[in-house]
Image (cartoon, rainbow, N blue to C red; front, side, top):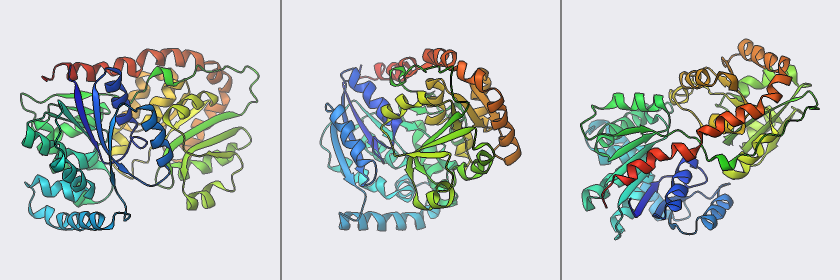
Length: 405
């Protein structure tokens, strides 16, 4: 088994539950972890400090992302702009493509060039970290692994950014010692970008969590006939499908409650939430606090607006896995990944299109079967308990055990 791991990410632990799970797993196996992340100076700061206190064995390096350190920020921003302009002219220059994806790639690369340590493995989370991990492989012959949490070429609308991240993945994934993917379809689509070689190893590591983070459901036979819906995200705003389903929920406002958990944007609150008395908002919670709270609800919303980007159709989010493990009934929109998921667990929820009539019918059916849904919590929780991170993480442990020190 490896003894030391360096993890590079372009976010922080609070924004990346997948990275956090990986670090907890490494620490539990007495593997020394060095983390290079970013100070975001936002709602995550307090949560980040609590995570650092919990994982005090980890060696932390935080880079600045804002104008607070003006000269480095300005230089990195300038490089990103230049790289963005020149990236279409130099499709085979992976350095240029990486900086065009994000200026944070330059910041991570600058740190990597100064770092005089050594590790058995570098793991890169998020595209901005991919090239810096490869740089350490070239400079020190340290094997590197990539974690693909989303299908990045299918994110957003910027064609040039999509092209750069496609070229980055096409070049670097085959060079990795292994690449982990967060869903089967993300793996399938990512592997279309390159020709796998004999050494290439790709594994699906689902976004599932530790069973210990979830409380057993409490079955209240005297429930008040109001179904409790929940939806959570780091950011609560337009573009995620919420604005499309709120008009449906208005039809059932005397029979439901809807709780939104996350950082609520002011404009969205004023226009969409403020006047809806059946909607409650809770500020962002730590991962564990969020998961323990889920047993208070009945139905989890796994709504995805696939018009925004292809990735939303391919991913299996933290949401759907958390609802699943908490024993909630899942109302999921019909993305190709979620169709496959719900077909595998048909008693755990229902599928709907993200359009008015279909979603209205789905909510109506849930209310008509409220008693059955409430009583089914315990059975769903028990089924999910057999599929936790405790077993999923063995895929990573097997890879780490085969890496030569």
